[in-house]
View 1 (spheres, rainbow, N blue to C red):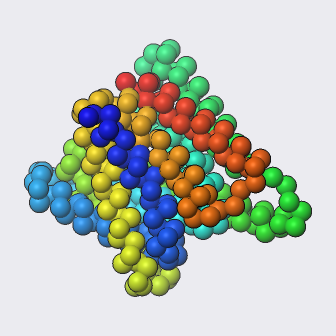
View 2: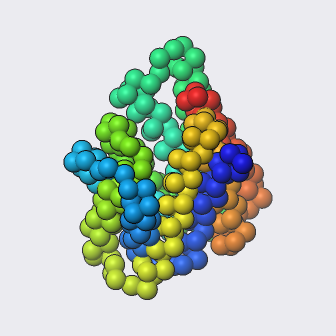
Length: 286
């Protein structure tokens, strides 16, 4: 049963890009709708669990939520520019690499030679996977458009990674209770999304529709906490990375993102490497 629970975050988080892609809206409307859904989930968690929330939790939770909104809005921007199938594995690889470096340099999580070896190996594998996923077959007729879209997508991914890294770094630095921080984080997420969406038609039907994606995020988040207690961080963390298979191949076959046979090979190898990097980190964190 624990293994099945550990698969739920992968399914929930891996489906977010697909669901938002079908629901429509610009990147900022998608982010705002998603944060409203997360806020509903946060309120529900607070009502049923009734955790004690102190001033520190409110402060760190809201700040981490603001960083998350920066990360998510730019991930949606990247999806618009270069597609879900390319954005998701690259974003996953960059996030894991950034969090690994933060753990080593800021929180001194590498205590032994084994930690250093596995950490460096994981980063090499993750970077190789992200690079492989971004490879495209040369097409002279689409060269200019492709380069422009890729530049926009990579810029958005860099900002997204900074946002997601800030989200986890602030949360870790605060040493916060997992259930207590859900509501403050979701409030920070909504505030950030409102700021970023202010000039991009935030009040729209697409915003309301994307509340569903926030519920997907909330479900994945809560089951990740349950899975960590049931089967341990190593398995739960590793299994959560499997979501890129759903988002990557779902976007190709469900959203209709075109890939040549060679590009499919690049995406497949890159996705496998990113998953492998996540598994190595899971082993290291055990």
